[in-house]
Image (tube, rainbow, N blue to C red; front, top):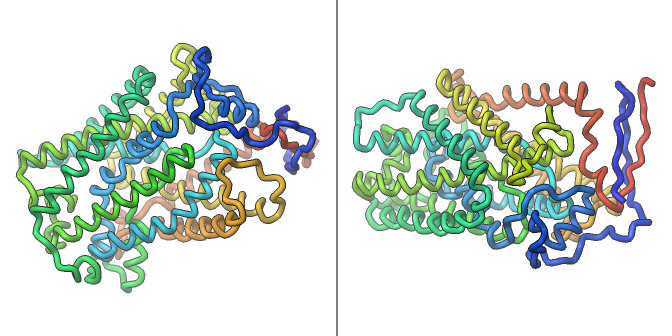
Amino acid sequence: MATSLSSGPSGDAMEMRVQPQKDESDVSVASVVVDSESNDSDVFKSTPADAANMRRMGKDQQLVRRFRVLSTTPFVAVATGAWEYTVFNLTSGLTNGGPPILIYSMIWNFVGFAPIYLSMAEMASMAPIAGAQYHWAGNAQGVFLIGIIVQIIISLHHPLYAFTRWHTTLLAMMAVCIAYIANVWGAKYLHLWQNVVFILHILVYLAFIIPIWVNAPRASSSQVWTEFTFSGGWPSIGLAVLVGCTRVRRGQERFKSDPKSDDLHLGHQLFAGIHIFYHRCLSSPNLDEALADPTSYPIIHVLRQSMSNNWITVILTFTLFLVVCSNIVYLVAVTRDIWAFARDQGFPFSSWISKVEEKRHIPRNAIIVTSATSFCLSLIAIGSPVAFYAMASLFTVALLQCYCLSIGCILWRRIACPETLPPATFSLGKFGVPINIAGVCYALWAFFWAFWPMYNPVVPETFNWASVVFTATLIGAGVHFMLVARRNYFGPVTHVQGRKVQHRWTGGG
């Protein structure tokens, strides 16, 4: 039977020691195919594997299972929008390193994140419940991009149009409302239409890249692979490369899904990223002109050289639709993460956030919280874009900090007391220790460089405020834990079937 802890006396501290419990007969992970046929009479559409895992985790299923491995793969691809976000995230690398750094950084980050992905996939198969509570920041970035794309389309036909901040904010708010409506009233059909969107995701990519490949002017091979350029003002080439290389990536965090679908999407993301970067580098021999584009996005300069304004409008309109769909699907992942963490009493007002709407079996309160957060972040951009991007930058540093801590804890337990690790359907086996070490090392390395600004000398407008926001968030979380959460939150491990938690209270009586 699942083991759980009750709250101790107020003001007490607690030490927990987790040991394997040998008298349980159903400890191992169920050897049931994840996509095995569901029970039609079950309102949650659960599979035998779901039932076994929920028993093992000491949880009751409350949400409807609408995804299988094949449908989860397009879910992840649409949610992350690998190429849609990548094409609007080129400035940092072009400023600190030039075209070569785009390609090398993609390969570098893929190699560095591979052990992180493998470690997280193993952890997800051990305990597929709560995680990635910082997703709301990435969601805010996504809705903001929708406003920017709309403004770019307008500027193509009205060159005198000014990119007004309050216009962007209103468009971002509209995107939040669309995502909210789709998540509440369209959740039942999400797994159906997202497969169509995934096909469109591939077709629009081809329509995007082929005209660039055929019509854009060509850079020389040396310009693509060896001619580094530095306009960020850093005093040394090595420092500029590290700033540019580490910062050239869209947030690598993804929905924690089945490891098989993660593997498929990882290959898709690498292919799309390198392909986009390579053709972007080939198609713009004049880097200064690309960086000086009136929209401030170098990819628009490349499109201008490859096609007419009307065709650019068509391409960007489809891209806009895909980003809207990405935000809808991403909100699904965000809200399920927050709901799961609230179910473990890890959030303020967890009892309210963790409620599930009985009629639709969706975490509507979690959807409200996430949408309201994105709504408020959009308002910040009216007063100061620097402040908005400072809040949004929390996404990357929180991501890497979470990787460091979670993989580090698994690494410590794998070395110190491996017998206490829960069973995993996706086990790293004897390679677990070196893979975990590589994951922690790269996460720490990227965490350090994620705080660096793009330009030097640093002024308030170019300062990377992630350090300030992250520190403030960490202090706030620490205060919340000391005053409230330490009495209510003990972690999902305390509920795992077949594990016994021994604890003793220390401190005042």
